[in-house]
Length: 348
Ligand SMILES: Nc1ncnc2c1ncn2[C@@H]1O[C@H](COP(=O)(O)OP(=O)(O)OP(=O)(O)O)[C@@H](O)[C@H]1O
Ligand SMILES: [Mg+2]
Image 1 (tube, rainbow, N blue to C red):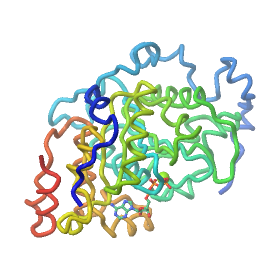
Image 2: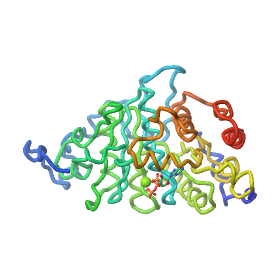
Image 3: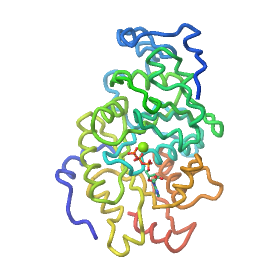
C-alpha cells in the first residue's frame, strides 16, 4: 500500500520544524538523606548540583528550548560539545523500538568518543538496563537519589565496555514515587554538570504524565515509529505535543522496515512515512531478528563484531544525530540484494 493520505495538519505544522540486588546503604551511612519536600524547596539533593550553581553555559534557563543542534567538526572524535544535548526518544505507541533505539544510539555515540548518559524514564517498567546487560548493577535509581538514599554518581552506572556510557534508571520495577517535571529537570541538569555531552531519555509509551515528565528536560526529540498506520498516527500526535511543549528540534526514526513488504505494496515506504509526518528523517532500521538476539544477550547490536544491516543503520543514525554524516548511506554498497532494495527505498 502506498500512502496517499496525509496526516491532518502535518505539513502546516512541520514546516516550522527547525530541523530520548542489593543495597549497600552507603547513602544512609554517609548521612545524605534529605526529604523530597526539602529538595523541592531548593535544598540540594545529594550529589545533585542545584541549577543556580551550574556553569553559565549549561544553564537551562530562558531560551534553552531554542538551542540549535551542536555543530561538530568533521572527523573530530569525541569533540567538546558547546552545549550538552538532551534528546528524548519517544513514540506514543508502545513497543515500536524506543528502548532498542536509545540503547543502540547511545552506545554508538559513546563509541565515537562522547560522554553519554542514558536515562530510563519508564517508571515501573524499566528495561533499558536489560538491553545494555546492566541489570545486575542497578543498585540505586533516581528515586533513591530523590529520597536521599544515594548520590547521583552512585546511581549512574558506567558501562564496563565503554566507560563514557552511563545509565540512570528512574525506578526499580514496582518502586513508586511521585516524580515531577521539576525532578526530571533537576536530574538532567545534574547529569550535564558531570560533563556529559549527550543525555538520551528513553520515554515510556503513551502521552500521560510519564511522557510529560520524560520530555520536560529535553531540548530535542527523536520520534520512533514503525511503518504501520497506528504507530504513525500516534507519532503524529506526539509530534504535536512536542511542539506544544516547545520542542521544535524533532527527528524521525522509522523502525522495523520490511523491504519485501514494501516491494509488494503491503507496507508504507520510509519516504511515505516521513512525508506523512513531515518530520526530518534521522534514519530507517530494518526488521531484524538479531535485534531480539541482541536484547536477550544484553549487548546492543552496534557492538556486534560483524554488524548486521540494522546495526549499520543504527550506527549511521547515530552519526547523523551528532552531525558527522549528513547523507543517507547507500546500503547497496556493503551488501547486495535485499540491502540494495532497502537502500533504494530509504534514499531521497
Ligand atoms: N528493528 C527491529 N527488528 C526486530 N525486532 C525489533 C526491532 N526493533 C525492536 N524490536 C523488538 O520490538 C520489541 C519492542 O522493542 P522496544 O522494547 O525497544 O520498544 P519500546 O518502544 O521501547 O517499547 P515500550 O513502549 O514497551 O517501552 C522488542 O522485542 C524488540 O526486540
Ligand atoms: Mg521501552
